[in-house]
Image (tube, rainbow, N blue to C red; front, side):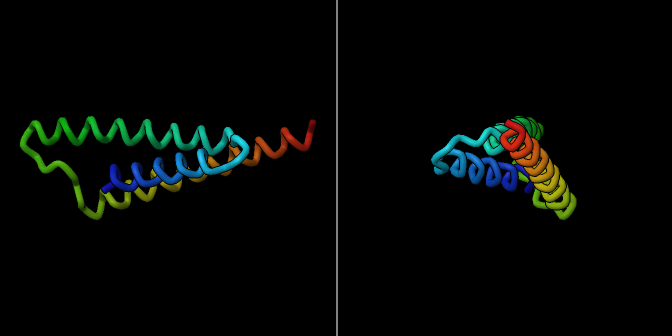
Length: 91
């Protein structure tokens, strides 16, 4: 479940990055972060499938892990956005 949530977040931030007229480095960095996590979990899912386990883990614990990863990613995005705004105001 956390893989699906991370892929959805990565796709959303990537769409936001390309849809915005001006390039926002906070959005781009967050999208890359989510794509990296999605790639990591994709490799893990394939390795689990090769060992005979189900491809996707749809348990409650995996859902909670996905929520924690999304929350951490949004916190990083908020921090990057705040730092970017402070740099723009300082100039």
